[in-house]
Length: 543
Image 1 (cartoon, rainbow, N blue to C red):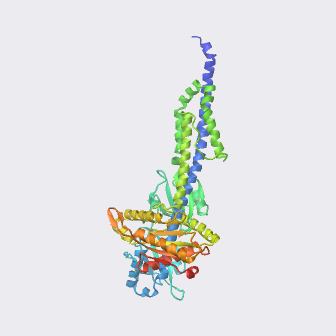
Image 2: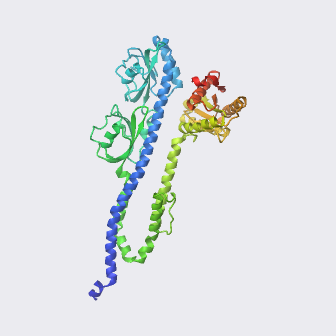
């Protein structure tokens, strides 16, 4: 065997060159691809975390605002004379709690000294307790409607969020305080935040910067515990100072994580959506392991496929990279990359295409979740507000009236109580389908509450009589459609609906029309339910 010939052979040199190229490119790909994927995934995951945090924060803000509004309304309605009649006051609270089930731990009323004189549901040791040491009671006596510091409830014996509103007498003096208590784990409040994980180990935090405590968290051990001291978590320190956004930080347990922060405006709290980077960048670790495991195969690949072979094989990847680069620069729209061959390059391009499709689908789904009701698929209050603004502008421009119908189901609560929430959800879905069949395509049907719907009818006849007749006809159809029997969990059940109607000409705001329609709806209920009432147009601006 001529070893000199072998050592000087071009084949040997090509093999050595191939080995060197394979090693160099393998090392380069190991570091460069890892950094590229980490940076790219950081952007994608941060964007998703911000969207999740913002969605959860908006949901919590809506629930807090809803409860504050309900409590303010009840405080205005509370008869001052009942403050000297605890039993009658308790009966009054019981009646209101049946119609205002937002507060899972019910209500209680304090006298002018801050001592609870009546509550419902009746909880041990609540009446007779001095609540003047609670911040929300002190603030309410100062005339403010306040969300208090989340605490372990004295009577409820679980983490609760208290809200208090002052009760004024005819002279404008605070005579008492009405407080509503909601457990953080109550259904429809913070229960989802406390139950949903992001990935396998990530989750959410709800933090009160004023009190520096965890209001709620996916990890139940953190609830009502104090937050980390200054200097432990730099991102947390910035959030306490008012910063909002996303970034990578080291938490109090020493774990590196991606965290996104969004505000809850009505309380001053903020939501943190967090995911450990080890889990978020698992793809980078798998890619690194893949490169190491296949280093020997890649060396053989380079030894066999050199020169023209390498050029041919990687030409589609170069084309795909150029195509992707043009898309990142905005020169081309986002679209699947062409797959020219069914090999590793084609597999990588296909995986990129699937990732791109998943990201586009996720963005579309997040946009829909932010604007539609998850149960019925109808527009939610946010999308309703946008469409109402368009309808008001069109009404003012075309000088045509529009109408807002506020619909509230009659007999819905017994279905929930007797058959459960699943039956209630089925009933709401069937009602939404029936109402959707009545409303015109150009009009808007939205779900704005538990069993409350709103219909916006625009482009009506300029003649007031004709417009009112058309709107009343729609209301009658809605009543007839809902009144028809529906089958739920094998039972034939009947529901009714009460409707309040407010007419506008583009001059009144959406809130004024909605408030007028809501008031008219309650008049319809007082008049016997299962009917509609048209709001007095002359008093619209007084609402």
